[in-house]
Length: 192
Image (cartoon, rainbow, N blue to C red; front, side, top):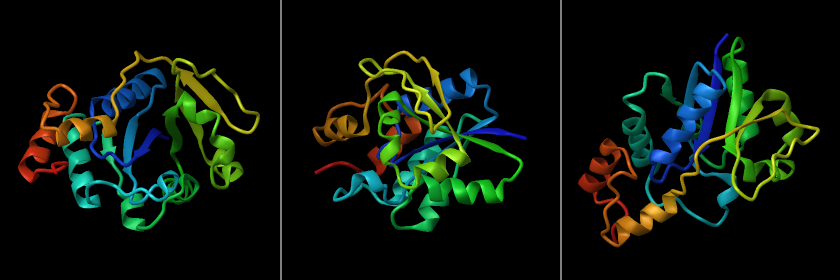
């Protein structure tokens, strides 16, 4: 049985904080692998669009994780198209990988919102959650969910912040893996 962490997001673009989170979850929870799940259309971003195509985001994730053989890319949500709910993804994964145990990785700020997630009862039967402690957010332990809290140095990098830097022509060196940075430059992503 493998212990597999799942890290979902738009990854628009994937940055070093994503990699740090995945690595810390891998080590702290003794996971065998962390799978990156780029979303086709995340439900929490209703009315918002991704800034780059799914193909570009998938390629950026592929490049971001290429040097870590314990990081994997899953196209389950991209291939499904449309809006992806975490419960649908976990349902499909647990049916396909019956011997493996899945852990969904999120920030402590999202634990308090779990009650609002689509079919949260079903979701909590399918997975445990690995939550990163964040300043200003208590370590909540809802009765309906198995939540494992881990510590990580605070790294305040967001994809929206990096898009703004790129749009303004500012450097994103040391914020992005080199392969991602090069891909963005070659395709002139996030420019006006």
